[in-house]
Image 1 (cartoon, one colour):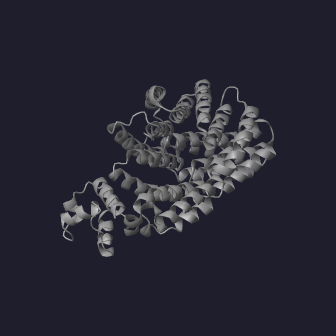
Image 2 (cartoon, rainbow, N blue to C red):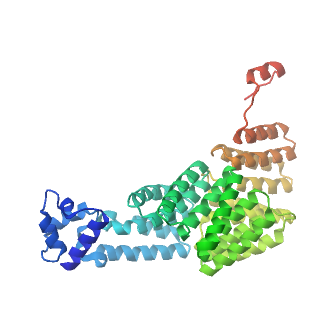
Image 3 (tube, one colour):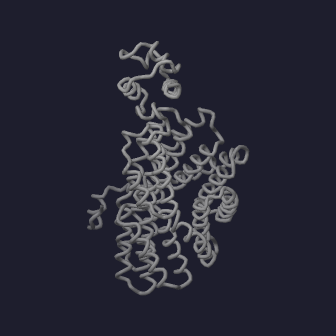
Length: 443
């Protein structure tokens, strides 16, 4: 009975309820006091009422974490995590979806839902992952569980960024970051990783000056207060800021530093993803180093094939395609591009347009002008489904360059115009006047 009373008292205090408030109209405050003191055993019906008011289950109040439902749920969570780590996100997802949350203590719900969201992410279904995490974040923030909120928000920031919703990525990330700082949690791993993830969104949105300022602040906080895990995340994303400013040498130094720090944590997934990023930088340096980039992919892809997501592998295939094309191996470049397209599917993704773009480049390199034009058109269609941003403006510019190389001046002009519009530069001359003067149709 004391165990039951202890659990009731702990949950009551956590919910900021007095004994009178918990008693309500159903019981007397003295009855609650007797239960919490271990001097009265609640009936099954009383336990059900108390469980409802404490947002838990009667089984949890009676048995705690050793209850049959909780024990089974913990076992399923462990199996699901193991499935994800072994490259089987479908099994992980199905195990979590099979659990009936109504019969499991709410204390376990966040872990179940985070595991489910990770499985969706591993399958490349960012929309499903977001749909799981958004309501979970709202609940966690309501209970002021700041560190859990930061972990969930970091996943959401990255998912929104990858799906092209940069505004939501930054807005949500800054809200929760402010909560952490108000709670005195500046410099914790959760604070640093969330702040570092938002840097990526700022870069993609084109706020390079502010991103540079925030990167300097985070590096100072990380070096003063952070663990290797937190510091590694900061240097990783600071390299993105340096890359956005086209300072590839600094970006590579930051990435090398991040690799050393993340390597100390033992996170094979993070190390492999950092190798992807390093390879990406090597392909954009001056001069580019495609051979060195392929070495990084040889080290990272086998790891991420087991512990990563389908998006991780697609990213590698896209960038390997670029590397092979630089080295003149058109066949391998085309194979990797097609594999990435098949892996990513038809949902609007930043990586999907890149995959169609590199496929077009490979087809153009082997003389298939018609196939290349079709690939570029598909890339344009994918971009058209995504929100305007610095990244989409740069993408339309890249597409225009391809059309120009093909001799399609009209297509190039449309792409360059779209790039300007995505960057916020709109036509200033009335379309009707241009149409009348030059007898052309103007969008």
